[in-house]
Image (cartoon, rainbow over all chains, first blue to last red; front, side):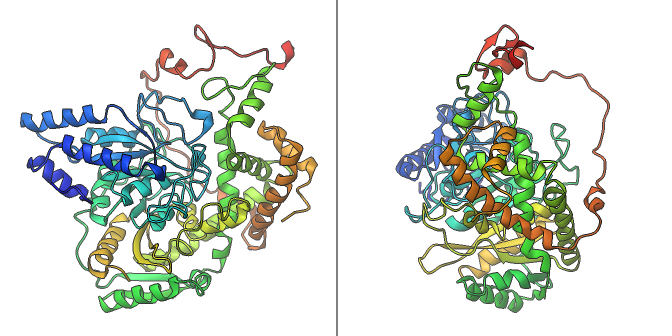
Length: 477
Length: 98
């Protein structure tokens, strides 16, 4: 049986109809993880994965009703809790931390029958866009060892690209699913904020964090997100809006769909290899009945400062809990205060410390109004402009990144140059809308380029319909 | 890139608020790094927005009645504790015993 790049839907069908067993499939993915271990995408393979696969095969043999994702082997990002397993957020601070409960997203997937193979590498505490901030070494791009995987969910993206699992979980606060999806040539969705429970996701910035998934096609993503989305009483911020059957919403047509592109975004990529790709995508969509228009949002240029004010502010508050007392690593000290400072200084990484400092700067009484409050005001303005565009259009297209994955080490000495890479992705987090990156083309070096598709709040179905159409009918542009 | 708001004194103030300590070399590095980031954040100041209260029109969170339920047991809470004495986390004296 050839298990190469099987889709999730084919796996479920294959296991239900006994074309192959879960154990055979799990062994295949475990061998893939071993084959690509030099990529450093997977931090730990769980030792009970095979045991769970055997349990799934017994369930199938029993003739019982089978759940929706029966026997599908997956990987989870290292900041998503799975009870009894280490969940370190790729930080020395939590290197030995064992999750005492499972996140809601993991619970829902386990109930649906998945086999969790292990946890994936990421930027420490999800702070980063390259996976170079991991305390356990960077993750290499799936297609080129000299290039970054992207981040912060780099390990999950690489694992899906290289067939180490059927799909993987990630989290996205400023682009941490979409950007690595683009860099590695896979599909990555950040659902609407509050669409998927954050219970059991280690928080970076609570008003921006979203759990999402990496898959190799849009249909798989649609199927999975329908299962993990929905109200969770453990997460009071989660929405009780009904969850669509996203797979059923894929109609096979984009006729009449209104798609906007943002003039200020297009100006930013005017000199990049995206320019020609975009023209081809737009021409294709128009040929197939979509209606394109260009809108102007002059405030767009401030999305990055808005994000890098609000996100560190929330992060600094979330990071206060690491004080060497209740969990996490503990350094020596004569007093409790010394233990607090010494533990944080010793076990937190450079980027995390920088963001904590930044957060305290913008929240301090001297600068609160000029920075934090101002950023919130500008965020509200940007949101209103985008909502206005999305009231008149079904979707917005923009690039996911400026281009192909950059070199490992190229941007580590200049944080601002790293932050600029988030220019196109932070918008969806600031305004809370769903956004997906799909592989659309390859750049000059033969590395993937992604197209980003945004929709109104809770309208993932529009994204899925368009994404599937472009991938199935458009192919590589 | 430096920003005149970010001096050694400011880095030390932020470090104290952040409960972090830095070497002198790190402090110098941070002057440039944090300064560069703050200069980027200054772009927000150029956007005209309505009164300061604009973003405060947020709906109240949904509230519910208290419900008794079992959360984490004490044993689970202490599994990851660096130091424990019965049902207490152990720390050295706080505030020098004052």
